[in-house]
Length: 211
Image (cartoon, one colour):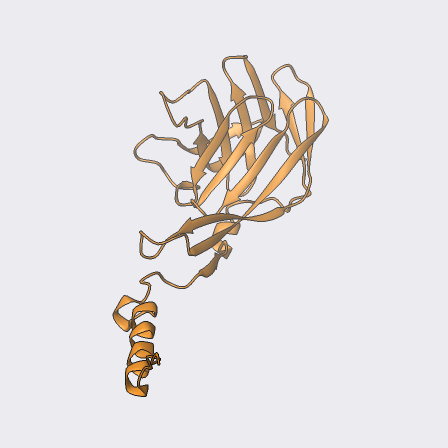
């Protein structure tokens, strides 16, 4: 008569414990990756004050030929720039930071001048994107309204269409590759905003008219 092999209870228990040990995470083998998180970084009141526009402004510019160009703001459109990172670096993306930003599209109602203004917390910069010319003017918040001792892109006083303006920054396009193109430039004032856009390549200029 064939005998059936049986396991004793202590041996069976030992096998179960061994299986659990090798298939479960041990305390010192827990994943080193941080839990997923999201951080929101908003623009400060000081940074918001770098732009004098309400968003629905009507701006008047005089062209070099004497024509009046009118642009109207389409309102402040807020959004967030998102940056992803990992903690530690070898882990999957698990950290998200959202940086507040907004833009104003200035749409022409008379003439051919138009531009978009952006203020972005992700790099603490102001951007003015010309629609007429394929260029982007930008400047950091910290430089606006201050004398730039390196490039001298600051003007203490400037008369435009018989009006005196002060503490003006001269913005130029800053390409990622290649030399700076000085044939385009823009004057910006903390209290009045965009004062003048000039293209020496096209011999064109648009200067603010006080209304």
